[in-house]
Image (tube, rainbow, N blue to C red; front, side):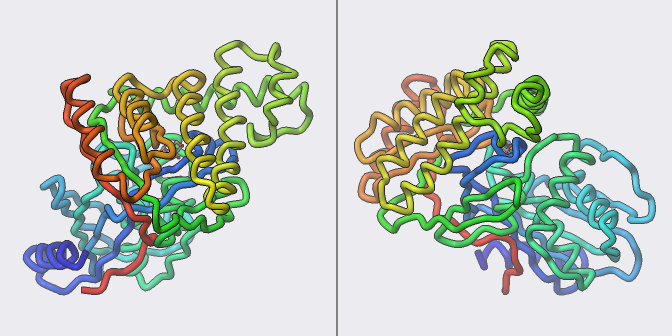
Length: 386
Ligand code: GLA
C-alpha cells in the first residue's frame, strides 16, 4: 500500500510541486445479493485490497486539475461552470461527485488531484465506486470537510445515477465507504444500516476474472431495474402498499404470478428469493456453517443464470467448475453481470489447487486467460499515511 501511495505522491509532486494528502477507497467483491440493492433489499459485499488512491492538495481558486496515472490523461473542471451531464469519460466519476457534493450543500474549493487505481477496470469489482468514493474523500479533505461514510455513499450513488447515467444501487459506494477489515457487510439497502459478518480465518475468497465484458452491460442493467419496477407496479393492486420487491415474499409472488408477464415474474422471483438467500448466508457464516453459505451462493448463481439472465457462458463455466472442486463451499458470479468475475468461498488449504483448476479449465474450454486472486476483506475509505 505504502509503495503505491508514495508512487502517487511522487507523481503529484512532479506535476504540482507540493505535498499532497492521499485518499484511498477500495473496490469490492459481493459474496451474495445481486441486483437486490435497488429493490430495497439485502446484500453482503466485502471491500477489497484493490483500491483507488487520489493524491490531492487544495488550490486557492475553484478549479479542479485532475490527472490519471492509470489512463495517462488529464482533465480540468471549473466548479463555477457546472454542467448537468458529464462528458462521457472516466473524469465524470470525479467531477460528478464534486457537483453532487456541492448540490448537497458542501462548499468545495479548487484542488489538484492525481489518481491511480489497481482495481481491475470493467470486471464487476466496482472500479467506478472506488473512483467516486476516493474522489469524495479527496475533495472533502482538501476542503477541510468531514467524510460521513453513509451520507457520502449516497451522494456518490447520485453522481453515478444522475451525472454518469447509470441507475446503480447503493451497494458498491456503501461498502467502499464503510468496509471493515476482515468482514463482509450485511447491508440493509432500505434502512442503510449494516452488520459486520466476519470471514473465518480458515476461509478464502477466491475471485476469478473471466475477462469478458458485455458491450451493452449498462443498458441491460437499466433494463433489469425497469423490469423490477414494473413488477412492483403490477403487484401493488394485489398486495397493497408495497414500495419495492423487498416487500414481496416468495409466497406472495407465487400467489399473484398471473398479474405479471412470465419474464417479469422470473425477474421478480430472482430478487425475492435472493433476499432470502442473503439472510441465510449471513446466518450460516456467523454459525460457521460454511456448507450452507456455499449452497446459498450456488443457488444464487443458478437464479442469476435462469431467472435474471445476467450471466454468460464464460462465467457460468467458471462458477460451475469451482462448484465441483474439492475444498470449495460455493461459487457464483459477482457484480452487475454480463461478464466479469466469479467469487468462490474456499477452504484455505485448497486455494492454490482450485485457482489452478480454474485457470487451466478456462483456457482449455474457452481459450481465454482467467485472472485469479485471493482477497482479504479490507477497510473502507480513509487517508493513507505515507
Ligand atoms: C452494480 C451496481 C450495484 C448493484 C450490482 C448488482 O455493481 O453498481 O448497485 O446493483 O451491480 O448487484
